[in-house]
Image 1 (cartoon, rainbow, N blue to C red):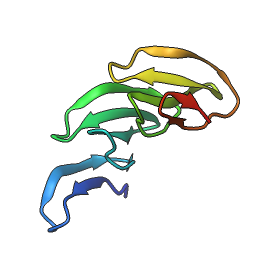
Image 2 (image 1 turned 60 degrees about the vertical axis):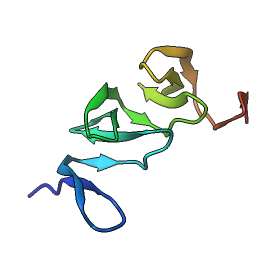
Image 3 (image 1 turned 135 degrees about the horizontal axis):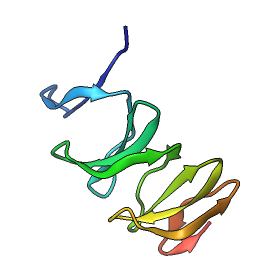
Length: 100
């Protein structure tokens, strides 16, 4: 039996029905979610705003999020457009537009 994750608010009220296989935290209004074996992003209402297409993903910071396909990492913007090509073995976070 597969366990599905729901996203909750502090008072315990269910905000988004249990339908995801994994989820990251909401940061900058978006959260990464696992659907099957692919990661995408949802908004606070639970609507998928970037379709699940990534093998791995991280949280948005300053409008960019790290994503991985075929073991290569790069960055997408909030629309899902790749803005830094998927070419790196590892990535870190941005801090005020500087890559650490």
